[in-house]
Image 1 (cartoon, rainbow, N blue to C red):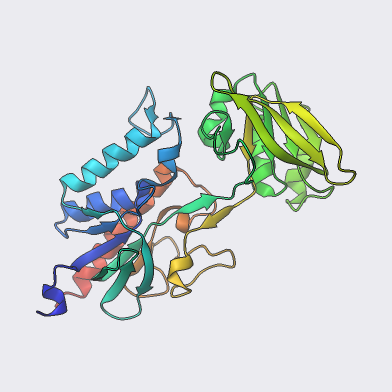
Image 2: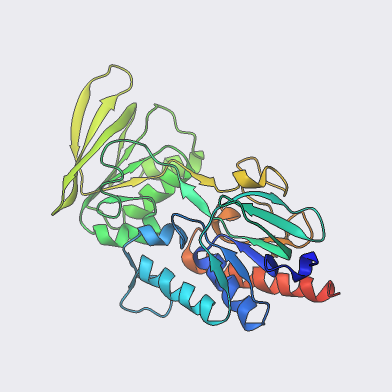
Length: 318
């Protein structure tokens, strides 16, 4: 049996799921390319499966739970012929005309085109209470969850551009915003730091780290345990919500540098397209987007990746 006759051969393989992957699956499926998707084993659907109500995705005026939105996208992709396999990709060979991906389960799949939608993950503090209160006072996205903390005491942890932007954005909602940073100096852009310092609703707590997030099942987060990095003194800060903004890590380790990456590991694409440095390999969603990080922008990019892949396959028909 030739490679193109193998049951493990497909026109297009989508590595990853979430809004970008599922949307790419819908478009490719409707075009009868029968895409094959390796969703990931533990959290198919990406970061939205860990969120609560999503109120800013078009078409849901009353909001929709993040897991429900991903279920609907998955069902739509499957309806149009996307084949899902719940496994993780551990290695790839994307350089030739036929690309191969190998999974944690030991299977190797091949295709003419590959779309990478593996996303990124929030860097976490790794402290007690962080996992327990995730979605119940602990958040990693101000634009996603800020609305739920109107007139509440909000804390932002971080010292970079994203922390400054989140603190400024959250000051629209919270009764107060406290920005906690482990050092005296910020690595953020001066203009963003100046904007935070000039905001009367934002308080700075420098040379401090959060050591524990406390709360209860009824109220979620209620307070934070802090430690001063200079003199070691400990204290407690009342808080209704904590936004952790210490960066992101794109899920590109499995690529081992086969496609062009920026210094932080995000996949580089050509202009407004989703083309990577390798012909027939495309990327969409948070794995290539360090700016917007929204479900709707990821979905739009998944659409573009599907169309780019279709054009590539048309140009390379046997």
